[in-house]
Image 1 (cartoon, one colour):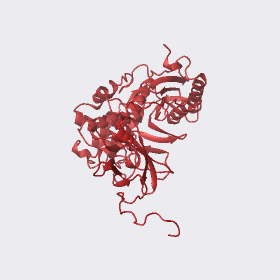
Image 2: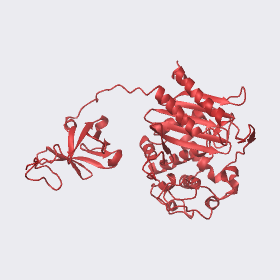
Image 3: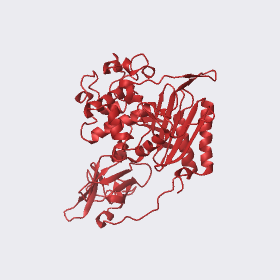
Image 4: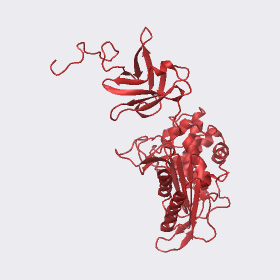
Length: 462
């Protein structure tokens, strides 16, 4: 059987190798390993090293830093989906006594709770977790940097609180819950709290000389949910496939889509980076990537997924500073997506047709704005403007209802689209969150809010 690792073109594989070779050489990293997955399959791995004969591979562990936060966020979303909490709940409801209990769970997930970015000194990444035995030691005295819910302000202590929340609701350690609910179902057998052989050692490279110094690898204690994990390029590619498509054993595709939605608006009209719920969202090379970056002393990590291209990439290095693994991972996605663009699935007709729904398709008018309604699979519909920019949305059929739908995206996300019929059973109009869509623009007798001028349309003279 042909290996999935042979699927990329030779020219693409060489371009990938060249990119990581440049990153390792210019970034002066002791080693760098990377991997690419496409449509759920590992299609390429590569590495560069400063030690002859000891190159890492996709099964070598590196510390992944804040990519850990995405795992923690998935655990919290599982609690929500099981009905054990609501994202709008104040923290105090489930984890009392923190002193910041009025902030909500969703604010903590999206880093909009206004909490401090770091725990009090000494620097938590280079000191053992025993230095901060209690949540009060993690939060310190000055906990509020901004009003809750107003802006994005990255907070490592916020994810410590979320890890403690998971422990309180599950009545088990964060590590045990993580292993049972994510690592084992997804077969992430090389992701762990502590390093397991083979693993890379963490190094600091002198900024002005080609010499190195070993970095400590501390157990972060309560801060573990913010950055403790070790993993491999292979495991993270499997995790990336999960982030793209979901897995009902862990978290549904719908909940992951919610995680990929920005939690607060950008601070300016143009944006390059936003944050969802445990996931970073960036624009790069004309495409949107979701994933996370990570760093701890001695290690750098980056994971990005392009949903539109079906491509994800991971880059890991064992250096405190040097190669920008997030940029490298993004470049690997671009190289594959541009060189070997996704081949679309063949067009196929719907397996069956509902004549009543088919009669609803075609042009509709919101006032004088023309829209087109298209029937898609599973009785869903799409509504999009026929001219210029406008509010395009997809709608899913409501269970058990023949003529109502719920918006999935865009301006109408969550809004109800319904068919309104006359007494004789004929279609009068579509109602979309109180907006009326008619078959003709301002036709006399139609259910147009405010009515239609009795004299109808007229030219310049009358």
